[in-house]
Length: 563
Image (spheres, rainbow, N blue to C red):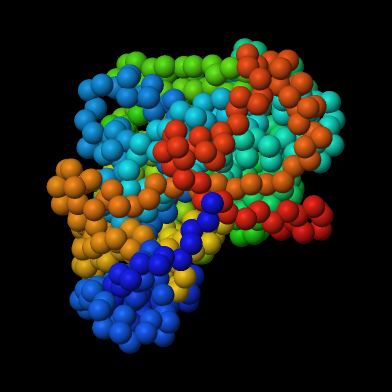
């Protein structure tokens, strides 16, 4: 299903705003912005009679940006349900908001879309249902592959890349996903065979393949079937001192295919110094400079209580001993994945926690191109998404950052390069990393931009010196042409209900002759038929409650097209 231009006669004119639209090359351009129905339009396309009837909103000296896009935030799936059950003492305003509170909080900060990064295929219905129950946001998800029997069996048997491509394309289509995620490639399955540590070149105890082979095959498949979003990679050895070597090996394993390294802060650790824990942010930055096929999001940690939720059962098992409060849940999911839920509290006086905080900021500030480093906290793992305005202030205000640095563990502050980084992000940089770059990485044409023809998601910010206040409380939020009332708790009474609920998805092609082979492999391990994974457009729209918006795929069959 595609959006069609509105036939509505409702026209809105935002008068005199300062437009920040990197996609259109507009950096602080003062102009009027016109909205016709649910689309941004060029004034020249509106006849004089209709223009005279426009509703005008004075936004003089205000900053105008497209709606924000969060490409990595855990907002749907069984792990969140488990976390809420484990932590009933958490309040909706804290680190585990309800679906309603999640949608309202995102939209009230000016975000229009959020993407669940770890949707297990056999749990896709529940994940989509939870996202559909999250109001005010467009949503989408990446299907989790790389630890399920079918793929590991295909690789172990030396299956041709074309068959692996068909498998990946079928799984993406069946689960209404927009991308593919791999978590600790092969390691979650190996954990079920009593393996407790696995690196990129370690052979799987049953299949004899390595995580590097899994990453290469999936990166090639995602690229060749034409998904816009590169393979979304949670590297081996998350959180382990010295894991920068695994991260660099992961980049090499991709063999030049585009990959996106997620929550990279958790994968940028050295093991130098008396604490055997150090920053390796510089090494990752150097690797990005040498490998233009790689993008990252940071997964910045924020001090305070949270709960970590991850498909990486292997490393959540190790983290159980650090749980605060002392409780946790580990789950095996069919023969395709796992789940670990461990509460955690980051303290600014602890050496490791303080250095983790500094490492994330180092990555943000040392990577010159903001289109290659996306703003995330890996909600809720590093901290809640509601801390984004505070994080933006840390990036834009050096004096504020230095004050925060002086309050962390002094040994960690001394170990970090953060004090020597004087860069301050600009409003243009923020627009890139939270709007235009995520839209491009996800292939969302017409989103993350204020160009004519784009979906009319517009945020109006008062230009305040305190950037945290500025980005926490926009003056006006417009969703698909509807001016939204931000006050009050009953959001449905203030215009939110007019915004259509959609799921962003793709339809990569696959050879239907491959499906029988794949289904036969699936029956060797699963307790249900592979066809039961299929979520039709009608089921998604009428039963789950979110309408699919299908974005195009551009198949790339030749390896010569690799980045």
